[in-house]
Length: 363
Image (cartoon, rainbow, N blue to C red; front, side, top):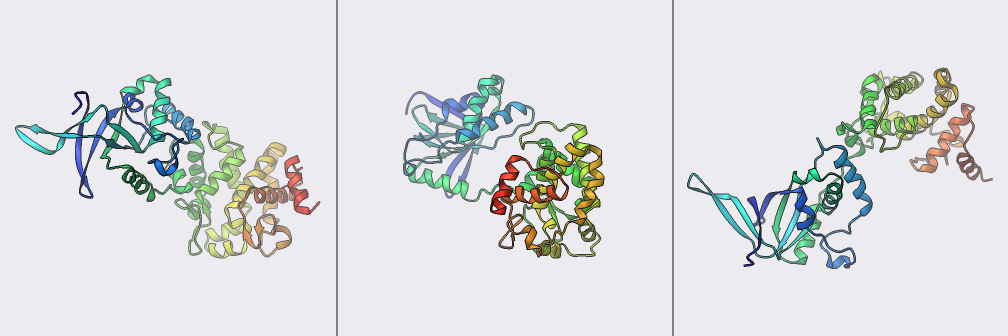
């Protein structure tokens, strides 16, 4: 064996009859020890996806901006080389699964899962070297060749499912817009009773009418914020809560659903306003009304209940909110549906909106 080694205190485990090891590694050693396959190597000869460099800055900012409460999951690493596991003895009793792994320095330590975390750690250390003494857990597997490493990558990602947008908003207590969306829901009984907080789509049997992600998006466009905004003022928070309260007051069908005088499934089947698209376009309308009319917007919102939101009114909604009778969430649908509302409210269209309108009208 090579006389020079990496030594990690580790816990030994067993999966599929083969040993693996879990250890803590100082952040400052991560870029030096662990490698990922070169992006120039053909995919069939690599063990993981090509590094997407555009993801790194956001992950770095996450670490730097949240030094007191960031969290990174474990790196998964394959060891290409001979490994020795030495058991510890505690009070003269040999521990079966606690000890240290000794890895020759000429071994290849290849990341199977976590190459973006590794790259983000490397960049974050350039800005905040003090993070170097913090640790990340590493799961070591013994490498048994390229095919096995590729299969490990496939298996690790096969069952990985991103949380729904609504669930992401629900569990996010840091992002200002997520926090505000939940406040908006909690402030209004209609939203609180009728909002699906886990899913981004609503089944036909559901008793819910809105999604948390839909309210998030409607509030975001109301305040004209990007999804990466880092601050919501108290004035903006109050405005959002007040605005959606006024909207609810002027949407008779929403209130009937809250009182259970009409089923939510019936509304979804028959009306445009029972879909996430409506929250977004009403939010965009609200941003324009507030800018042009200030406090007077509240009186103007009474027009919302005068609009024929029925999906059967194809002369208005087909090609705008619907395509072949189905609700559309495309960018063009958002713009064209907003255009209609702005025309009802007597608001001027922007040059971009006019271009979309001309195409829609066949001019």
